[in-house]
Length: 376
Image 1 (tube, rainbow, N blue to C red):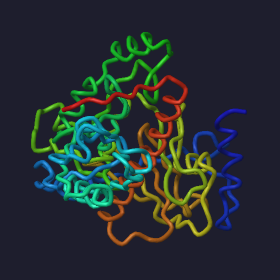
Image 2 (cartoon, one colour):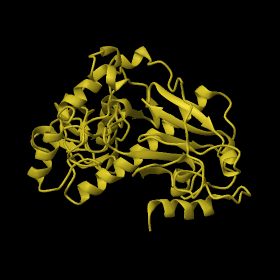
Image 3 (tube, rainbow, N blue to C red):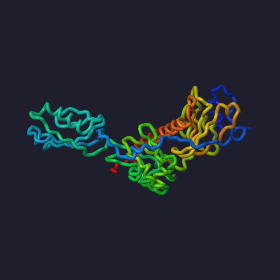
């Protein structure tokens, strides 16, 4: 079945607002040609907070994978016995616990080194005749990690063992991947391609993003990596997610109140109504009068509003999409265009991030992905 036929069939299920027309467009018999979207620049992110350009002053807190050196000083009851000379190297387990001397598992997940030392000392008092002098040092900081995926030389999970900027992280991941570099790396690993599209794609910095705690950090990757603008060189924090997409990813993204949010491959012409139909149609109570089309950079996009309800009732022409467009179907009317744009960018980044992260985990499980831990 052709893609246009699939779109037409899916559109029938999509018409849940009491409409009876088949969507118009270039693939609909005798329908008018789709219109060109009317878009205007819109602010899609708050200004970058200058505080993000400074290393964090937060005290290090332990997590699974961190390695500690623990020493009990000047205590005859423990020196020369276990551990040797009162010194041991322990690793925080997946459950957040460490095991030292005769102590049961001590939960240190989220504790500082000072708090960990106090907790060990408290437990040791039950076994020693004199007050123990405990020294705890961090040997390896393995729990602070960031994801760097997409069009970089070595996509994977990286360890933050010290203050690390976005530029540091991209450099440590091999920089932006060229077509030949990706192809060579894929060949050396014995696979057909790496990343999320193929070994012949290059980076689309306009759509690159950094997610922190579910929100997009408004970094302009083009200014940072093309122009060397260090005002965009933020310091990373644990669990940051960096994604650099392919410039040749011919997809549109249908998000919001649709049955199957995500990307749709674009082969030939595609309209707003067809794209929504291919995403499984809308969910109940979708607000079809203010469907948004966003195009261009995630930091400086253009945006337009179309009434899909009017299109379906023959009161307006369907709108032609371009590769990379984001179509967003809301559940309720937006209040301000700026807030609507914030919502769309955050939803886009989270959706892509979840999908690409899951794909990277799947590739690693299959022995295909690349996971690297490096120091800044």
